[in-house]
Amino acid sequence: MDHRPSTISSGNGFDWSEIDDVLLDMDGTLLDRHFDDFFFEEELPRRYAALHGLGIDKALKHLLVMYRSVEGELDWTDLHYWTRRLGIDLVALTKEFDHLITLHPDAVDFLAHVRAQGKRVHVVTNAHESGIAIKVSRTGVDQYVDGILNAFQVGYLKMRPQFWPACQRLLGFDPGRSLYIDDDEACLAAADWYGIAHVYHRSKSSSRVPPQPSERYRSIESLHALMAAPLADR
Image (cartoon, rainbow, N blue to C red):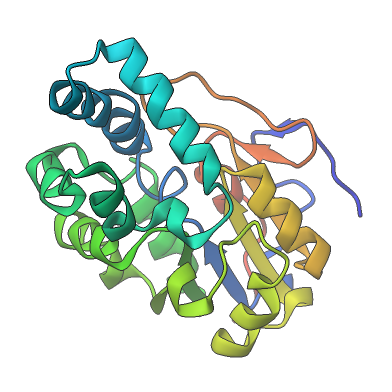
């Protein structure tokens, strides 16, 4: 595989005529990851600390151990699982802070650009259905795509190699004519292994964190970079 690691600022080397399907991660790629970082690394530790009489730092350490114990499994992103395990209603807590859920500034422009060329566009996400519903309600991202496929429908998280053949069966895309963008290198690696021809890393996943380019995959700070690529003939 050709993993050109340099950050790109234009669409050089990328041609939309080679693409039929666009597969997009949700949190960090289309949506600002600030909400998720705040939720799981700040607010949830505060609630857990208050519930158990712990300091914030100790509560966060406890939570990180629990997060890692199911990392890569569906439980990792299952809001109902964490509600049971922590004794905190994560769906209600998500709704309480849903004002922090926002699209990246370039997301709508990019989605409109892709749809205008007649490409099929699907969100593929590890997020739990309950969280997706809240984020869709808040952002309206569903109106810009052909569908949203989550890991619970597939049976595996995106970093698992089993995800991608099942995803292909459900969506019917040709891996050789597909583009996939994600801020998670493990998910990109699984897609790359399966044969997705065009994989790009979103380096600017959060509005509050500097870009973090990938050392393995082409990185784009903004989705506008791919909008500069040659347009497909129509």
